[in-house]
Length: 256
Image: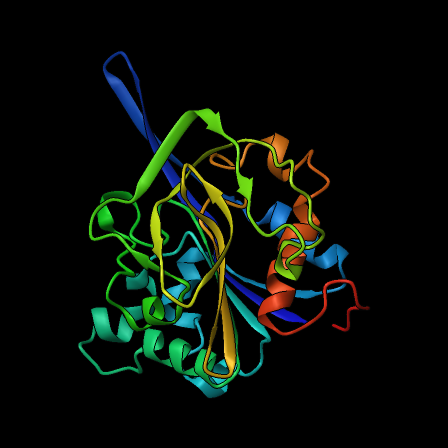
């Protein structure tokens, strides 16, 4: 299985003030590590497209997307797909990649959205997937306002359908999570796990394709080490989730 993961990186800039002097430093961070390790350990090929490369390098057409079995959007907002530099800086036309992605799914592609500050509706509604062609194929609808649920006390998921292949093994005792994006399941979705009474894992068949969501994060801070590093159910969960979207049996031998 060839997986394209878009997002899961960020650049942090901080200002240091020391008396009358100050300076600014920046750092680049990737959060894809736990997810990439889990998928590659299962024999899958992972192509990571960091967030700063998404605007210019995310596949633009269904034909471009055909190189992949499943696409994962993780902590990357709709604007990054809609606004390559030729549009934002040069006012030239460009294919609508949200439309292309939805079209590819309906023709048989697999799409997974993982939660975060720039997933679903996101922080201050800046992820902005509500009302888009991508939302139309997801198993959930997005809220019109900031959808984050911060849970510093920790919330334990509740598994509703333990034997579903998308959960990768039927584990029911999941570690706590520290937050998630609140969404509403669509009528034909199947909610496999919940958190705080809202969907955590949901799946849906759309045309010839399949989509799935995991509405919390696959890495810190919402996914603490107890979940993404120490829990032996982490890798089976995400391999199962992605495998289901491609129609593969997670228990079957994996071909790259």
